[in-house]
Length: 145
Image 1 (cartoon, one colour):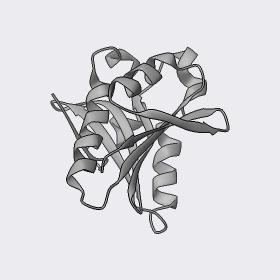
Image 2 (cartoon, rainbow, N blue to C red; image 1 turned 90 degrees about the vertical axis):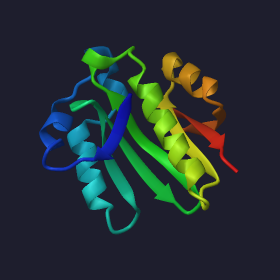
Image 3 (cartoon, helix red, strand yellow; image 1 turned 30 degrees about the vertical axis):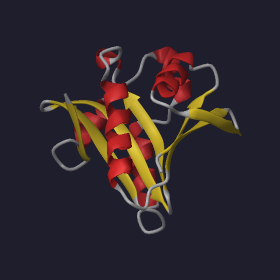
Image 4 (cartoon, rainbow, N blue to C red; image 1 turned 180 degrees about the vertical axis):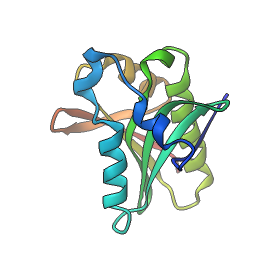
């Protein structure tokens, strides 16, 4: 089982040290860059940098933005050591549960780089459907209410 918690002084270094395999590096901004964006946009949009924890071990990172009636999963990554163990899928389910508990949330949006067929498959199994292309990313949507 996993849990997500705001990145703080106890998880900051571990989140920055997370890495993906070299073949996946082009698909994702660094966590340090994502944390800088969260700080930069903190007054404009409610952006939450979240550590993905399995027990006390940081295994991933998720950047979540709440905009009007939707949750936007801006970034999601699982460290290469912990991939293929279901942590990414569980993190997505955590966001979905939170969205369903939020009476103002109508849908969840997430995007992935064209060619990331594994992510597409996970999202489709969770009920997401494609709503278009944005630059080099496929945008997927899950209707909540």
